[in-house]
Length: 509
Image (cartoon, rainbow, N blue to C red):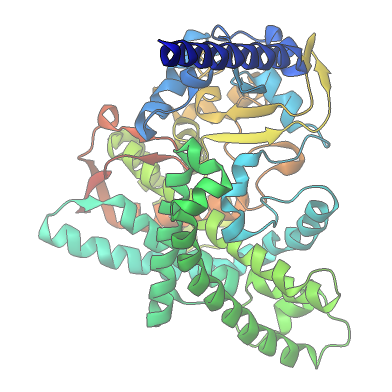
């Protein structure tokens, strides 16, 4: 009897203590600026203690993607909020809110989500902020100059010839083609040669590098989808960090060796140059110019160190192949279902080649219909489906208050489906990007390359690469549908991906 009384007393005391702690925690949560700011945005009811935790998290990759699309419909394509453990998450899907965030020169800090890729690419142009970001942007901007892009065309054309050769084998056998591995091969080969001067298909070491890059993407994907793994100590004890580090070591060693070799060539070249400059390295270098050369020039001026060079090379590689690869896949999926669009593209391509058998950069710029086709593809299937920023100062706009510490996510996938800006948004219509239509829309209704001061530095590079690929392929083949658009199931990730392979058929013209 005494023992049971003691047990009951202990139980009651512990239960009372837990209730007291929960009450204190709830009082604390309600005292935060984030709780008070939540009223400025529509959203789900905020429950005691857990707030919106179970509303938002613990879904599968496909479930998370589908849920975000459902929320956009529920809140009528207007910006909404979630409150999770005292942190306000504002999910932006209206162009006015996008303009406020992306046009700001102060609100440029990436959210903590991006820390997941820091072990791979460091804190370079993608992840840095403040003075470091401004300095890196200044160094890298000249690498996308008109003359340099013109020089890269030769690399694009070489990779396109390899692609056509591979597709020709599929067409000759009458078999279907899975687009994802093909897109990775083309875009990774291209970015590695343009960024580092490295031909990935010429050495066994390069093949290992290519394989490891793909593995890195898988590990990052796993961490994104499991909120428990956001905690570094959990990530470590579960073995994921050890696995990640094991993959990263040979990647970083390989990149460091490439940088060392290129540095030797660079210094040898610069011995004969009085004043090193972008123009000098482009015209005097003994091998093809690579973006790495601009970084080595900055290093010679003490504007960047060896670690910074590797950060930017890794960033080029990560951003430059994954996003363009996604655009490659979904553009071919779309045009496979649009034979009239394909025919117009083919006719435009033939007109260009009749006038200019060896097209230059300006010739690709003159492919106006192709430009609209690619833009419409990027609207329907934006390669980067969201952008995430950490708000580093209190912000007031349009009668709303957003406290410091808020996470604002621009949901680009849903922004591009706002029926007020894009009527019948699921319909593929390249003429949405005729000049008169573009002028009627908010410039912040369409942001596949972000916008404002932190827009994508490589967007002209990406558009040119996609045009070169489409030109080479459509000149030789018709693209026929196999995978249906309505059957595509997407997964939540930093880059737009489908759960299953996207398959088309290429038929010789």
